[in-house]
Image (cartoon, rainbow, N blue to C red):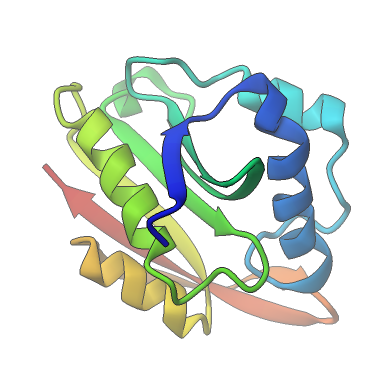
Amino acid sequence: MTDIAIREARAEDLPALLAIYNHYVVHTPATFDVEPKTLAERQAWFAQFRRAGRYRCFVAVDGAAAVGWASSARFKEKPAYETTVEASIYLAPGRAGQGLGRRLYETLFAALAGEDIHRVFAGITVPNEASVALHERMGFKLVGTYPEVGRKFGRYWDTALFMKGR
């Protein structure tokens, strides 16, 4: 684990980040996207991130390979929500349970520490014990559950909403 570096995500990381994300699109209910994203679609997503400010993206790199990422993005479009962000984290298959999620989130939240952010939200498709445990370890608290809000793989899924305050 010590060989894994955590750094700001760069444009050249995008193909690997896309592959990680599309794994979850195709194989899990962790995201409610149902069709794999294209590189062009993810380039538009990636354009929101900056090297400073509320919207950031960090990548975990093992050698030359990106093995996970964590980001903070706009929570909702209306201006009154600007001090609230949504956190997301995705790890490459086989990389969970190694402390990588914690390291990514620690880096992200340290970078956000001086920003004008009041709340951080994370939505988790449940059941997902590993993600719930990670978010709770990082100081998130369950604030509610949206029952059966997403349909994927022929069934309805709940989304648990977690919040971390400043």
